[in-house]
Image (cartoon, rainbow, N blue to C red; front, side):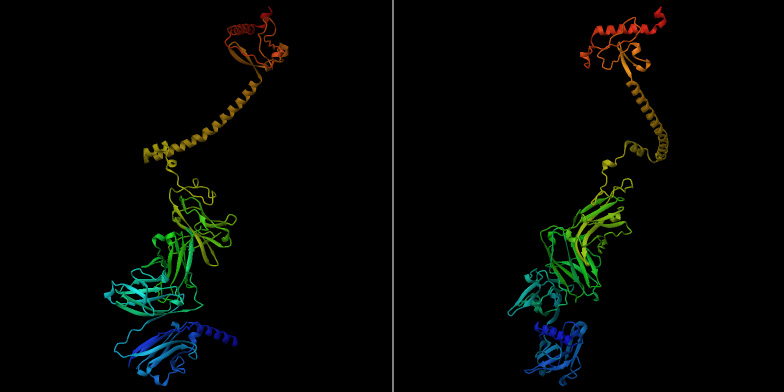
Length: 629
């Protein structure tokens, strides 16, 4: 118990040293006999919700309690003063009626057992006139939250200048106006916009800091010269439990950035969106209802997590013109808006690949992206972009459409594989990384599907490469043959005859092809045998004729007077009247191996060859018995 008390006191002391967390109006004015209302705000911590709230009047010695949330009411205020606590709104309200001159003075509204704790000083006055002056509108905001201030004036100011200025000791310094003038310290985190009611406008300020606390004036016309104005009292307090915003986003050309936006999931707001700030407004880029600005199709996505009260925005394919301020917005007036500045710096994206791919329906396809070593331990995914989101498909998970994501860790390539591409697959695909539920860098690829549907024979090999791109065939490859053109010219009536002719041709080919193969085999055998026969034969020249006489016709070449003539230089005619019809003699040894050139133009050689032919013919035609006689 002692430890808990110490922690509570330490927290309490820190709150006091920071200037106090209770906030209310600096001054309240009422009419004599009338009433006033004082609103005091406090942080919605558990201790504050259950703590004692009080309203006391200051004196030189002490601050005497008039009202408290425990039910105490000072005697002189019985029946004309009440205190109502609203812990769900972080506020308690003091109402005082039947005001008298004695009510004028300095008061405190606070939380705790005495006025030395969390408190805020309020001055109460009574107007001598008949009209009570308008009080300042109070805004109590957590750092680094946002505030929406509505200023309503008459229709006569519909075309007048609208502005917001901050009060100083001597004047009111301009913050923003509808002419495009913006104080540099508020650039990118303040927005002014006209409402549907003429003469009325809204001012939204975000990424608030304690230094933004102060008194402001919103008005029409020119301050101190013409028009009207309204006082706004803004108080910004620090609370460690408030999540820090991301004031600066840095991206490289072609890369991506992501940011987290917060909202109250229990609120009544139904619209959450992200917009790009301009001096005259904020252009909505995407919202949770499925809207995406046309120029951002395939580039931006929103992941909504209502269970955490957050939504994630991812923007990729970054360009130089994307630099600027972006706002997380909801349609709830009490919601905390936030802003971030996007800057484009020099560098290259970490995820790389082919940005545009074409494919033909029915063909397999692989889309790939490469990632660096720093993403080795990250979760990698592919997803198909839609205006309502991009649902990740993790590696090695196949869905019913035949898509499978694979990761080659050795080459650091993440692939999305299609069994067969269809026209429904056309669109944007994102390759991305995430870790511990937080989205990181992404890379976008556009797949266009067009051309003639491929059959299984025409489909390319899916293993052709990780970045294989299927391109439709050129017109020259799809041209019809002359026969096809002739059939097309014949008209539809000739299709049946063409089918019959095709059937007969198929049968005829099935018969002729085997027959041709057999003939080819027989021809090959005949040529081989002929070659062997030719190799074992001697070439004999007779006159102008040549004939092959096989040496196998003789039982023994030597018994017929023939000699080996392997290296014969020249042949001589056989002697007439001898028993040897053919005698071949060799030349001198010196001339062996040196073939003698034949004189093809010699007349004597021709006459002798012809005479030898005639003599040999007579010897061959005359029977041996006749020659012996």
